[in-house]
Image (cartoon, helix red, strand yellow):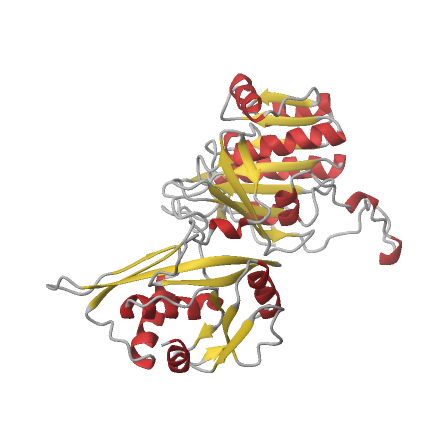
Length: 450
């Protein structure tokens, strides 16, 4: 056995080091390592101990406590995989002002009306401020309890008094545990609070929703272990100047992790949008140059989205401008190069602008063909035929590849009234009332249209 040596522990993340260093190797914070004692000698063996429950065959494990309970908000239930699971811990993160607190207050109101007591604990607002928001969105109920606390012990006391079926903590960074060293909102405090609430949630079968802050680059603030502790991680996205809000599950132990829910924020709160395709497509009486419609897949949901482009003569005196909004800039640059090299359209001395409609962000390759057609249409100043959608991935050699879910994409486009689709070869049968135009490469697509 080696003798014990002095130990240094980071006050932010709890990382332990045998010697002092100026910068913590774990959380990269400066000047946070402090001497706390000695590193205990490692144990050579661990003896058997008591178990919480006897192991049973998997077929004999009951499912009653793992059934999802719908919240009454279809868009929220879609992302969760059917609803809230008793004992589950959810982490909801998003930028300030995006509508997290408003949506979760509505969720708490629906759960209180259907399943009994619900507790909302706010560490950022007073109970009176939360009450004002609840009045504005019509979320008042006798079974909905409010509290304003920043101490973990006080939060646990409220849980004991109310015995809620759902606990909403807004936010986890504002609650501190006096038993753990570290600054308020630091990595060690956040991990300790989340661990304690997770243990209580599993013991009581209480669904817990933790609201998390985000950093400047959009990542969830706090240690990475926070995302591993919880069962579901939901991101709440939306442009500040748009009323559209989207929630995505980046981790979900009880359902699919690629679903999306669409909401619209207004004076009455956050309202679900069951058919959001009309938000992402412009309504015009006649086609205009530089515009093409595609169908994207968000989880199992096909959504129509419009891609627009503008090609203008460069003012000279420098490199041409390339501006992108709602699309992946690297992919737009690649499509520009393919359109110029394989499609025979000169873009090297022109300014090219590309954007999506409605604030939606399009990242999947299925929109490549629509983007290429929009750029070519803008360059030629010639609109595409009315009622046309384009679905396909464009390769560097100009070939057009098939994408997944083509049948569902075409069916959604036909339901929305589109009559023609430009698709790769072998894309399957055409829906009723729709004509398929199959092309093998980008040059062939341009030849069929112009």
